[in-house]
Length: 353
Ligand code: NAD
Ligand code: WQD
Image (cartoon, rainbow, N blue to C red):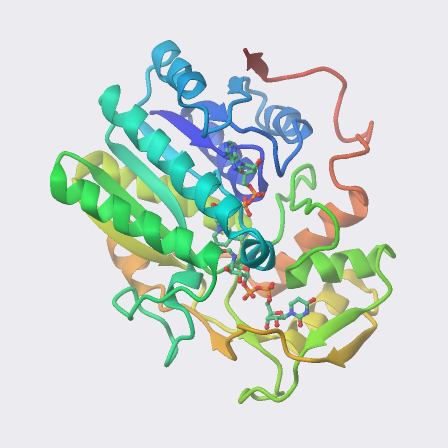
C-alpha cells in the first residue's frame, strides 16, 4: 500500500514508518518539524535501507498539503500530527484547538477532494477522562479533562460525523495508552523538547545525568503502593498495531475505536524498580505533590484489538525499560547531536519543496 504519514518525524510516527517500510509499503511523509527533528528521517532510512519523499508541510497550510496529494498516489493516511502536551494545552488552548482540529479538518478536506477515504487516527486513552473502573473498554463513557484531550475527543466526533455523512469512509481510531521504549537499533526514540512531562523520558534523563532526581507525583492513591498505575506499551508494539489497523480499513468501511495497551498496569515505584534493573543504574526520587488531573489507575482492556485486528502487545516491561535506556544512553541529547557511529552523513530520504 501507499501510505501518507502525517507527524512522521515524531516519536510514534518514526517507529511506525520503520514498520511500514519493513512490511513492504510505500510511504509519503509530512511533518512541519515543530516538535521533531529531520534527523529522525535519516535514521528511518538507515534502519530500513529505503528512501521516501518527505514534505516539510504544516497541516494548517491547505495549499501546501494539496501538493502532496497531487504528486502522489495515496491509498490511506495515518494521522499522527498534533500537539500533545497536556499542561501546555491548558495554558495555550487556542493553539491546541487550531493546530490539532483545524489541521485535521484540512487533512480530511484534502483527502475528500482526492478521493482518499481511509484513515487511521492517533487518539488517546485520555478520552476516557477519569475512568470509573478498570480495565477500560472501548464502550466506556468518554470525557476529556483538558484542552488536549478535548481535541482528541472532538476529532473522534468529527470522524464519526464524517462517516455518517458518507459511508464510503473507513476510519480507525486508535486509543493509545502509555507508549515507552524505542527501536532496538537504538537509532530512533523519544526526544522531548525541554524537561519531559512524561514518566519514562524523565527517568531516562535522570539516569543519563541530565536531571538530578525524579519527583513521584503522589503516594496516597488507592493502589498497592500508593503511586499511580498506568498501562505502558512498547512503541514498536504500538507501531505494529497501525499495520493491523490498515489491513482492517483496507477491507471494510466504518468507524471503529480500539484500545492499544497491554492490559497490565504498573505503578510509578514499579517502573522505577524495573528501570533500575534493566539499566543497572539507581534512580534517585522523592515523593512530591500529586499532579492535578491525574487518575489513580488506568489500564486497557485490549481484547477488542486482539479479536478484531489480530493484534496484541508482545514486549514486556523489561524490554520497554531496556530499549528506553539503550536509546537514551546512546543519544544523550536526542537527535540534536548526530552520533557519527549511528548515523552516516547525508540525507537518505528526499525532501520535497
Ligand atoms: P510527537 O510530538 O513526537 O509527534 C507529532 C509530530 O507531529 C511531530 O513531529 C510534530 O512536529 C508534528 N506536527 C504537529 N503539528 C503539526 C502540523 N500542524 N503539521 C505538520 N506536522 C505537525 O508525538 P507522538 O508521541 O509521536 O504522538 C503522535 C500522536 O499520538 C499525537 O497525535 C499524539 O497526540 C498521539 N498520542 C501520543 C501519546 C504519547 O504518549 N506519546 C499517547 C496518546 C496519543
Ligand atoms: C505516568 C505516571 C504520573 C511524571 C499522559 C497524557 C495522556 C497520554 C499519555 C497523550 C502518572 C507519574 C509522571 C513524573 C511521576 N498522552 N509521573 N513523575 O499522565 O498517564 O498520560 O501521556 O495522549 O494524555 O496525560 O503519563 O507519563 O505523564 O505519567 O510520578 O515526573 O507517572 O503521576 O501516575 P499519563 P505520564
